[in-house]
Image (cartoon, rainbow, N blue to C red; front, side):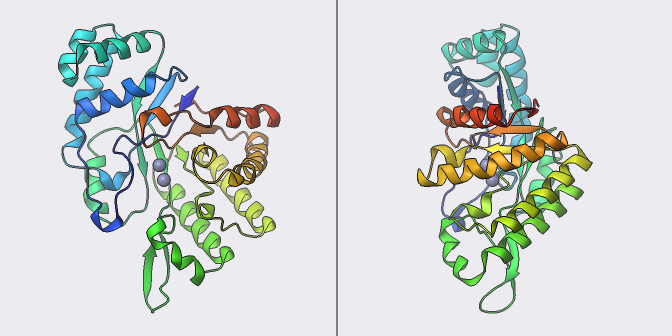
Length: 295
Ligand SMILES: [Zn+2]
Ligand SMILES: [Zn+2]
């Protein structure tokens, strides 16, 4: 089992206060250690947001990768020293990795306009094992005039849903997403249903057409589609069935087209990695013929 989606840099802070957060080798190593403690997974991919990338990250990632290689080879003491973590932690992760656990460092690359240039430069200095491509901003007409980039899935800006119909929101979202995945490196298309975070689903016929376009693009470019389980373990329980129904349909289309499906918990704390996977695996089994992505 693989979990392609985790954020060691933690939960989002207020929009105006978000700044790049530097990794240390120790934070990365400890994230994997704590996530491995759940014992439910074979491959873990760390995918923090591209806009949180700090200039120190490429060095920290290189050191963390060295420590992980040592841990995988059974050298817990070397790993502890390299990552600057207690030996006990390193031994635990080393045992898990010797048992087959893989720990990879990727990124969730989105269209956040804040310091996008700086983020791209930093990103070019390490090779992400997996790029989850996602859209978190939509360029629309602001109610007071002028174009703006709306952080539509951020609760601080949710009052703007009154200004746009679900149909318009979804059309703009899908156009933006398809442009991104057609032009930029993508391994996995992240959380396709994110515009419905606050319940804004378009009419089913339109949603189905959007899904068809996504599956087409993924077929052409050999991309995987994420089955994001965050809504299955967070947020209102009544949403769960809605999400599962939509994912069931999307998985049927993916299976028919031969598009792999990547399981992602979108965990913002290590203990949340692989949460919701039981429900997701049930859907995968019901649909049948689904190829599960393996980074
Ligand atoms: Zn995201
Ligand atoms: Zn995420």
